[in-house]
Length: 161
Image 1: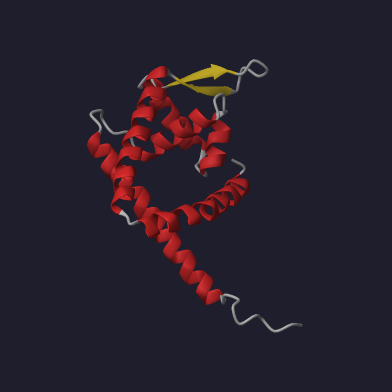
Image 2: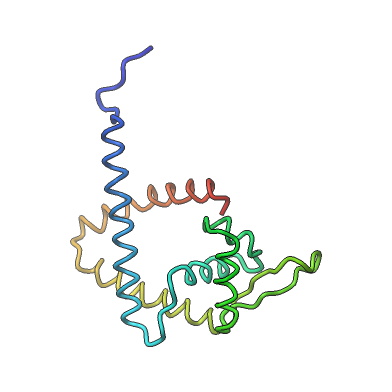
Protein backbone atom coordinates (compact mmCIF):
# COMPACT_ATOMS: atom_id res chain seq x y z
CA UNK A 1 0.00 0.00 0.00
CA UNK A 2 1.40 3.38 -1.01
CA UNK A 3 2.05 6.04 1.60
CA UNK A 4 -0.32 9.01 1.45
CA UNK A 5 0.93 12.03 -0.41
CA UNK A 6 2.24 14.78 1.88
CA UNK A 7 -0.25 17.09 0.17
CA UNK A 8 -3.22 14.77 0.80
CA UNK A 9 -5.70 16.24 3.27
CA UNK A 10 -6.19 14.43 6.54
CA UNK A 11 -9.65 13.57 7.83
CA UNK A 12 -9.15 16.32 10.42
CA UNK A 13 -8.43 18.83 7.62
CA UNK A 14 -11.53 17.71 5.72
CA UNK A 15 -13.71 17.84 8.85
CA UNK A 16 -12.51 21.38 9.59
CA UNK A 17 -13.11 22.49 6.00
CA UNK A 18 -16.54 20.86 5.96
CA UNK A 19 -17.47 22.62 9.19
CA UNK A 20 -16.34 26.01 7.94
CA UNK A 21 -18.20 25.55 4.65
CA UNK A 22 -21.42 24.46 6.36
CA UNK A 23 -21.29 27.35 8.84
CA UNK A 24 -20.52 29.94 6.16
CA UNK A 25 -23.25 28.66 3.82
CA UNK A 26 -25.80 28.55 6.64
CA UNK A 27 -24.94 32.01 7.91
CA UNK A 28 -25.03 33.44 4.38
CA UNK A 29 -28.46 31.95 3.72
CA UNK A 30 -29.95 33.02 7.07
CA UNK A 31 -28.61 36.56 6.92
CA UNK A 32 -29.57 36.99 3.29
CA UNK A 33 -33.09 35.71 3.98
CA UNK A 34 -33.47 38.15 6.89
CA UNK A 35 -32.36 41.08 4.76
CA UNK A 36 -34.61 40.08 1.87
CA UNK A 37 -37.61 39.75 4.21
CA UNK A 38 -36.89 43.13 5.76
CA UNK A 39 -36.81 44.76 2.32
CA UNK A 40 -40.11 43.37 1.04
CA UNK A 41 -43.47 44.98 1.61
CA UNK A 42 -45.45 41.73 1.92
CA UNK A 43 -45.90 39.53 4.97
CA UNK A 44 -43.00 37.09 5.16
CA UNK A 45 -43.77 33.44 4.57
CA UNK A 46 -42.19 30.84 6.85
CA UNK A 47 -39.02 29.34 5.38
CA UNK A 48 -40.64 25.90 4.98
CA UNK A 49 -43.42 27.40 2.83
CA UNK A 50 -40.88 29.32 0.75
CA UNK A 51 -38.93 26.10 0.18
CA UNK A 52 -42.08 24.43 -1.12
CA UNK A 53 -42.83 27.36 -3.43
CA UNK A 54 -39.26 27.28 -4.78
CA UNK A 55 -39.47 23.54 -5.39
CA UNK A 56 -42.86 23.74 -7.12
CA UNK A 57 -41.48 26.57 -9.24
CA UNK A 58 -38.57 24.35 -10.33
CA UNK A 59 -40.76 21.27 -10.79
CA UNK A 60 -44.32 22.24 -11.75
CA UNK A 61 -46.72 19.35 -11.30
CA UNK A 62 -44.67 17.74 -8.53
CA UNK A 63 -46.62 15.44 -6.20
CA UNK A 64 -47.01 16.30 -2.52
CA UNK A 65 -45.30 13.02 -1.63
CA UNK A 66 -42.31 13.95 -3.81
CA UNK A 67 -42.06 17.38 -2.18
CA UNK A 68 -41.77 15.64 1.17
CA UNK A 69 -39.08 13.30 -0.12
CA UNK A 70 -36.99 16.05 -1.74
CA UNK A 71 -37.20 18.37 1.27
CA UNK A 72 -36.74 15.58 3.78
CA UNK A 73 -39.98 16.37 5.59
CA UNK A 74 -42.80 14.15 6.79
CA UNK A 75 -45.60 13.83 4.22
CA UNK A 76 -48.23 15.01 6.72
CA UNK A 77 -46.13 18.12 7.46
CA UNK A 78 -45.88 18.92 3.75
CA UNK A 79 -49.60 18.29 3.32
CA UNK A 80 -50.34 20.82 6.08
CA UNK A 81 -47.97 23.39 4.58
CA UNK A 82 -49.43 22.88 1.09
CA UNK A 83 -52.93 23.29 2.53
CA UNK A 84 -51.88 26.65 4.00
CA UNK A 85 -50.30 27.72 0.71
CA UNK A 86 -53.46 26.68 -1.13
CA UNK A 87 -55.68 28.61 1.30
CA UNK A 88 -53.41 31.67 0.87
CA UNK A 89 -53.84 31.47 -2.92
CA UNK A 90 -50.22 30.60 -3.73
CA UNK A 91 -50.59 27.01 -4.93
CA UNK A 92 -53.17 24.99 -6.84
CA UNK A 93 -53.62 21.29 -6.04
CA UNK A 94 -54.55 19.50 -9.23
CA UNK A 95 -55.75 15.93 -9.53
CA UNK A 96 -53.40 13.66 -11.43
CA UNK A 97 -54.91 12.63 -14.78
CA UNK A 98 -53.85 9.00 -14.27
CA UNK A 99 -54.67 8.70 -10.56
CA UNK A 100 -57.26 11.00 -9.02
CA UNK A 101 -55.96 10.21 -5.52
CA UNK A 102 -52.66 11.94 -6.33
CA UNK A 103 -52.39 15.73 -6.00
CA UNK A 104 -49.99 17.62 -8.22
CA UNK A 105 -48.92 21.15 -7.37
CA UNK A 106 -48.71 24.25 -9.51
CA UNK A 107 -47.85 27.82 -8.54
CA UNK A 108 -50.45 30.49 -8.96
CA UNK A 109 -49.35 33.75 -10.62
CA UNK A 110 -49.25 35.60 -7.28
CA UNK A 111 -46.65 33.11 -6.00
CA UNK A 112 -44.59 33.46 -9.16
CA UNK A 113 -44.54 37.25 -8.70
CA UNK A 114 -43.62 36.87 -5.04
CA UNK A 115 -40.74 34.51 -5.84
CA UNK A 116 -39.47 36.86 -8.55
CA UNK A 117 -39.53 39.81 -6.13
CA UNK A 118 -37.62 37.66 -3.63
CA UNK A 119 -34.99 36.74 -6.28
CA UNK A 120 -34.70 40.37 -7.41
CA UNK A 121 -34.20 41.64 -3.87
CA UNK A 122 -31.71 38.87 -3.08
CA UNK A 123 -29.78 39.77 -6.25
CA UNK A 124 -29.67 43.45 -5.30
CA UNK A 125 -28.34 42.67 -1.82
CA UNK A 126 -25.68 40.27 -3.10
CA UNK A 127 -24.64 42.60 -5.93
CA UNK A 128 -24.08 45.37 -3.40
CA UNK A 129 -21.96 43.09 -1.20
CA UNK A 130 -20.00 41.80 -4.19
CA UNK A 131 -19.28 45.35 -5.35
CA UNK A 132 -17.71 46.00 -1.93
CA UNK A 133 -15.17 43.21 -2.54
CA UNK A 134 -11.87 43.77 -4.22
CA UNK A 135 -11.13 42.34 -7.65
CA UNK A 136 -9.03 39.51 -6.20
CA UNK A 137 -11.84 38.43 -3.88
CA UNK A 138 -14.43 38.51 -6.67
CA UNK A 139 -12.13 36.44 -8.89
CA UNK A 140 -11.52 33.93 -6.06
CA UNK A 141 -15.27 33.63 -5.57
CA UNK A 142 -15.78 33.14 -9.31
CA UNK A 143 -13.21 30.33 -9.27
CA UNK A 144 -14.85 28.71 -6.21
CA UNK A 145 -18.41 28.74 -7.57
CA UNK A 146 -18.02 25.75 -9.93
CA UNK A 147 -16.73 23.69 -7.00
CA UNK A 148 -19.66 24.74 -4.82
CA UNK A 149 -22.08 23.98 -7.66
CA UNK A 150 -20.61 20.47 -8.00
CA UNK A 151 -21.09 19.90 -4.27
CA UNK A 152 -24.72 21.03 -4.55
CA UNK A 153 -25.28 18.78 -7.57
CA UNK A 154 -23.91 15.77 -5.68
CA UNK A 155 -26.18 16.59 -2.73
CA UNK A 156 -29.13 16.91 -5.15
CA UNK A 157 -28.32 13.48 -6.58
CA UNK A 158 -28.30 12.00 -3.08
CA UNK A 159 -31.72 13.51 -2.32
CA UNK A 160 -33.23 12.57 -5.69
CA UNK A 161 -33.90 16.21 -6.61
